[in-house]
Length: 146
Length: 220
Image: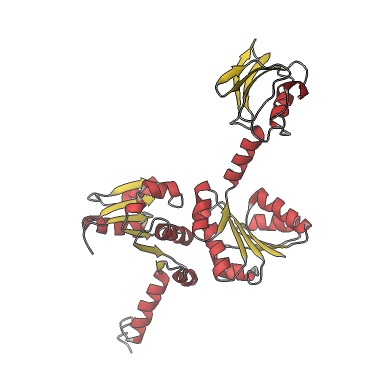
């Protein structure tokens, strides 16, 4: 990926702030949106992007973030519905080329795949990794007494 | 007709009462357990306690085969997802979302979900009823014992096209000046009033409302 993309991240929790710090360090222009100002404290001191305090389910806030110019939007809030709504708005109204949403509930993931929204489901990912480890017998280390 | 409503508060309660009176089968989904208990005492509807944007809860509530789903929660993202799930997963033919942020009414429409904004509706109702735009209080005279008011006649005004002498005004009121095409006319009984005229009225506080109604035709 080119290093000068305009990336909007919705939610500045553990995942959002971590992504923002990484992407900013890699040289991208990053805007982080969160309704709670205190969450911006988890951004690292060398984070060079913008912080926008506001509710991303409001169109006015997304316009303020200049979402129309963004190459990428990542919705990382802890509310599935907020992520799904913001992702759809970014894709269908602002025509953002790359849109990703974190969704916790795997049932919702399927519905949104049908709507063309790319989702990342931590539960499904963890399940896959665990299952793979179990398959390959690379699970927990074998106990010495067996 | 089976209607599923997700939401809370007084609007939900009165809406359900209304629908039940019409003979609709109403199912309510509400997250708050206490409110659910209270609703179940007040209404003859089926009440499901849970998250309406959860496909499992929608299924429990009988979304499959419902005629309509209304999402009235105070959270726009929830309302959108509820309606999309109902439509995509359960094939509900009519889904309607409430948009708390008026901008989201258009956003939802673009995303294929029909929506309305209460703020929008109330705003336009108030403007219609009170005709905020068309009435300007120019100045109070003698500490408000006399009002001078300007009103712009709309095409649907009941006095548009009438001659002044045919208009029945309450006592102690006067059409002082009519401004038409930027030209002031001091009208007589034979002059008529037309849509678009700016009419300057002299009224007293006790007849101010009734006089305005003669010109706007609205029953405030």
